[in-house]
Amino acid sequence: MRHTAAILGAPRRRVNAPATRGIQWVMTPQISSRARQMPASPIRKLMPLAEDAKRRGVHVHHLNIGQPDIETPAPMLERLRACRDRVLAYSPSGGTPEYLATLVEYYGRLGIRLTLKDVIATTGGSEAILFALLACANEGDDVLVVEPFYTNYTAFATMAGVRLVPLTSRGDEGFHLPARAAWERAVTARTRAVILCNPNNPTGTVYTAEELEAVAGFCRDHGLFLIADEVYREFVYDGGTATSALTLAGGDDFVIVVDSLSKRYSACGIRLGCLVTRNREVNQACLRMAQGRLSPPGLAQMVAVGARELGPEYTAAIVDEYQKRRDILFAGLTAVPGVFLRKPEGAFYFIARLPVRDSEDFTRWLLTDYERGGATVMLAPAQGFYATPGLGQNEVRIAYVLEQRHLEAAVGILADGLQAYRAARRLEALAAEQAGDGDEPDFSVPAEG
Image (cartoon, rainbow, N blue to C red):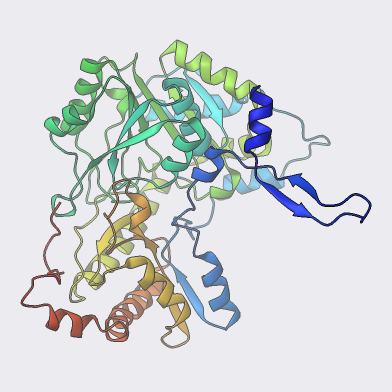
């Protein structure tokens, strides 16, 4: 009966057939509801417009994506050049002993004691997030997340069949965590975990030790897992540091850290990360998932071992460079009328509020209708970093991963572009017409809500 009902309910299309056979109906296969719900990436979905601009001879400053331009460290590249393997074989599902030992040493230098059994190699941090969601939540369960958040969490949650429940942070508060009362209102009987990115992508916020301890207490009180995305751990500015969830007292049973080499060593293309937890049941569940996909990238693990040769001076130089880039963008953009942002504390992103009504329309316009001196900029519209409908419509995420001179040029292009866009969309005229109604927001002050 189920099979018959499925057939009867399937879409059909009419096709021509030989006259002797008359009209025939052909069943059309349908993709899954999960596939239909998969969101397009707000970071990448406008790339065709950027490619069109480049074909027209326009240089595009990419502020939309966190692809560093800093060279991958020489010891890692040298290991790749030195590879003489005649067969590129599978690696162990949980990772090679050499790579896992490299990770244990790395965490040890941070004062975090781990064993090889606490770490699983993953295909980038992305796979670690997916494994964590699959291990912690059943289909239909809830996971709490602070918005704005890394947009691909939505994709991973869709794959896992779980629902992201947002708690909104405010730009005028530096996007720091909401009060405990907001967390209590969000938790339900279906809540299984909290996912937190620290330092934060997309906001650049670095949560304090007190904030993390408060979240840990909330998780303990409600029996929840804490999935901590710590990909940007080193990228903290003005002499600050980030607190790892692995150092939280009593967190062994519920803390899961997802990590990646992509940004730390400017090696996004090797697609290598790890999942770290002292919870043996979670570890074994994720290891079985890892066995199901056979092995993480073998060449990448061989390359990653080269990071053992890097001293603290490497990280210090990289952090210093990104702080200079942050300062250029912050100084330049805060001087632009109508732009609002707080100085980011870490990572290499921030959310800025612009004097526009639709940041996606503005981003498209920059790529299709505007250039200055043969160049334009590409941003990431912020709507896709929120789960709450309507939020982020006049915000963008900006990544400061370009050389300082390119960032200086990008600021000038963006400032002039905003003025030209507002004129093209008659925003100044609309603001004047609606001045008595109060419909046009004051873009010089923090947004409400």
